[in-house]
Image (cartoon, rainbow, N blue to C red; front, side, top):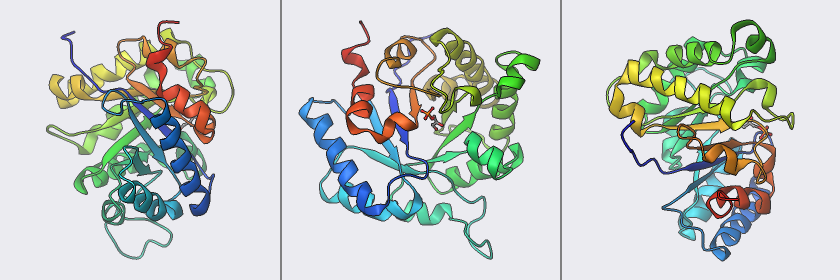
Length: 263
Ligand code: 13P
């Protein structure tokens, strides 16, 4: 593969944790901790994904203090506006300067019955509003046993990309469901195998240039102690971190993986 420079991406999915007041203190502390450690944000991008109700506060803090931390939402509606009680439009997220939005997280696929078609429609909606979708795919332990390592994530990604074309800016997150919140992360080799298969799906559907430029993240029980192993793999460009993203020290240590990648 040609040497393509993809800026590593360390993303913190807060899930339903931290209210808007807590989010301000947290992002401030995270930014200080990274600044104290001389973190080079150009070399490793860091983003947080707070609950919707925090986004305005996070935007005000980040733009007011000119922090280099990026942010995004955890979901978006497939629709632009209308009678969709409880839904949030991509236009509203764009108005809050969200750069990213997580789409198709396994918790939404499971608890909110989000189908591959909905994930595709939401991904297209994000792109339409100028927001980069972080498209999540991943197999359950049962899928793994029945279909092997890549079949389900590959099928999910193919379906999610159905509404996209051209030189789109997307991020893909491979999150094996069995590794989420379990403390049992995939091995770097397992992650690499699936991430390489996902990159091939992107190449086949959106072309080689998009595939080369797209960051593919691993997610599932990532912590400071195991990030380096994942980041050594050629097709793993970052991590989508849940639990460990709620601790500023742990999360900034993950973002600073380059300091311990050789260890
Ligand atoms: P954990 O890091 O808590 O396993 O969660 C991963 C995840 O679901 C991130 O989206």
